[in-house]
Length: 333
Image (cartoon, rainbow, N blue to C red):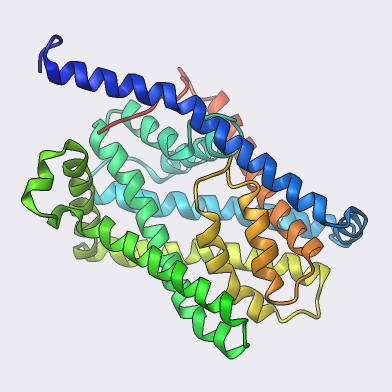
């Protein structure tokens, strides 16, 4: 494709339009985050929030932060398994370092640059092809969503057993169906009719589907990949249960744990900055089904968010000492 060709002009125009839309998308996400946070705090008794917050000991808070730090390590290990599947000679310690940098960009910077882009950029900068760099990160996300959806399905009978409200059960069921449909597309986009392959975007997604599906045939990769994925989500569930036990020990903690996968699935909707606002609203409603007071659910959500921020700050330190560091730029296949 030459510089003056029509294809080049269309590609340049598309990139230019995407660049113009990014500030608008960021402004929309920022407005959603701030709006939801204002609504949440407006409806709650801040004195009650402070009172419950004081029930959390420093040791408990430190424990939760350490749990999310361990989770970042486990998540890096899962991604490293995918990198090894693609025969990329990247050490586990390097994958952990890059994942910490990704946590920094994902949680700290108020921009459209996310942790996934940062991870892909770091791998690309270390010599991997741009296409494979992006595929490894997206495959990592897909398997994370797959195991979270499986956990939501496994916990659904517990929600029925504890007589969760019918409308909530319908909502969780619809959420699971939507997630499962998205996963089916993610794994089988390369099987769409031939005429769809005329679109470059569909071809790239088809390559992602082929690559992601190929991991299931690799016995040395799929077992640790799924095991590490379940461990990642188990840490989130355990952290939330530990926080609730520290404030409200007489709750039905088993029901609370069963609600967390559906809560986290809903909180994954990328319409706010680092999940702020959406996570708080979903947590208040979801944990409310287990009779958790809104103030307690808000504190849990804030502690989860702040723990991730602390891990992101650690990633910022890693990025600062990284030689020849540059700010990640958007990647395409």
